[in-house]
Length: 471
Ligand code: AMP
Ligand code: ZN
Image 1: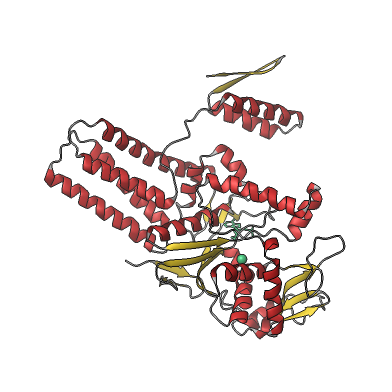
Image 2: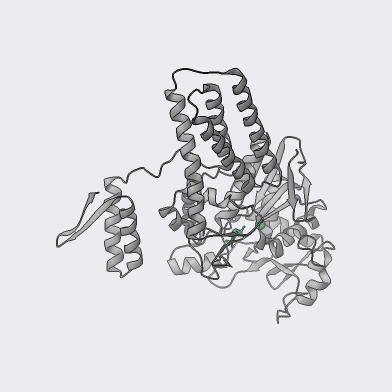
């Protein structure tokens, strides 16, 4: 089977054909770095890292670009609140971002360009749009002339007339039309700014992705991706900017992941119903998070709860147990009973399972069904392991196929959850618990107590402080 990708642009699954044989140019919209990312934000990160892994597995050389929005209103506000500069806010949360996603086994992007390091290119892009009549200056701002781009609305499949009717009429006489969107914002007094031909200011959000995708990948890219909420207006606006400038198709395949929900609602910063990835990782094995995210097809909603996380954990544990047992048996088996007839049957079964796994991944990266094939592999391995006489070749084949599937999904089968806490880590947690209590943050204090309990550390609060021992 050939690889098929569901393309938001056509609302159909299409056979994937990259621009250049053997190469894939992929751009994923990255985070605005003003805060820790939440576990909903981790979904596109894990999903598109898996897409990249599978493309690599299929033999493609993938160029993967993902930006950091390191200046915008939210960063400016965060800088005021934290009493540090905007670049310091960005550095802090880019650092935090890598700490988190590295644990999730997410491969480093080919490039993670930052907006503030590409200001000249962004300004040049805007100037070119002005020259072509697709943008205009207005009192220090620059706006995109939306109605001039005939294809506007093609990604979100909304005719421009409909958008026009739905547009809120605001008293903003800076714009010629309500559908126009900002490319450059003039700086308010005291705000961070860059010099430009249009005056002191900073870029709007959409222009950075058009500029950075073009700079690092070229006028036309293969895959552009992000969460469903980016379809409109962000990706629609990116298309308008890029295609107006180059006259070429901006991206051939548009991929969008569904939302991660909590209690039936989209997890989002604005709703306040979010849990940071940073906090989730304190309590859960990152491989479980990753396995959980991939347990549902990426376009469907996924619901986060103790039950769903637990299911993922149990599923991964089952695979790990089989993997461990295979390893043990390979090490300890003394005679290789390569009973030829049966051996070939088992090896044939294994080849079929591999094809099944690949077919599922070829079907628009259906990781949910690929995981079912993974469980089937594990089930067959368990059956094989009950035999008294085994062929080491078959065992090895089971073992390496488990590794292969795990590698494509990006989960580790080596169980590290049993690793004991070091003494210094325990001391640090106890200190943190004490501080939490002093700040009357009892929730955090209880959380630490529970974590230590889980690791079998017994706490004793005495008049001379807290003592601990291993249970
Ligand atoms: P934001 O910080 O809101 O710009 O989001 C960064 C990325 O995370 C974008 O690709 C969003 O579409 C995606 N995203 C945000 N919230 C969720 C969610 N609850 N579920 C899945 N993806 C999300
Ligand atoms: Zn973008």
